[in-house]
Length: 304
Ligand SMILES: [Zn+2]
Ligand SMILES: [Zn+2]
Image (tube, rainbow, N blue to C red; front, side, top):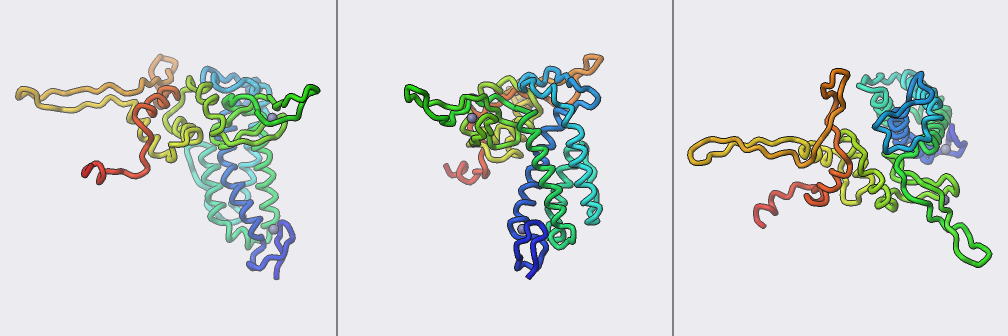
């Protein structure tokens, strides 16, 4: 019989971490990259007042004053993960952005969980990543408010006349998270319960197709796959050309994009970066084209 290096409970698995501690580690490693990516969008190194520019229209401005806390918190979390990766002799991933590198590190640590559980420092590892998970989650929920999700409907007692009160505080959905936490009463509700308000609020948000797909999958019940939706959205923004024969002549038919897209402009006025889609256009097109199918139904289409 050994003892869990995290909670001290006796373990029968021969490892230094009990099943509960291992499950907690997996949860932390799942959410850490979501918090990191959301916070990284708000990081404004050397610009404590953090101008958000036009892309911030859908976000509230509360974060500006406090965004100076984001940079050091992300740096500390990243440093801790790097240190543990080195201790465990894991290779350090190279990715395009720091957020992607961080996500890849979390994934490597997740796969290394059996080795972590057998490591003499396993208890410290759990405490380390728990600390960063709490820190980044707190920042996420207090600094990055996300989309307005309506007022909190949690019952909050009765007044003198016996009428029921609700909490009434404003709530926000953070992109990437599936729940909404009220900062006044602490009530937690599922993001989909706020979907009508959020979708109205966020219609004018423009973003690259993958970010739009990520948001829609969280918010819309009928969408389950970010990858499949991402591919559909990308196609909706493309002009399609098709060659056909008319009266013996080959002509090219051009089908305009289903969704108009925009791109950012550089200093010379040339378009740069990925095509940007408006969330409202994607939702309208989804409504007319139907939900993304999980399985290609070619067989049924052929016989039906
Ligand atoms: Zn334990
Ligand atoms: Zn509340």
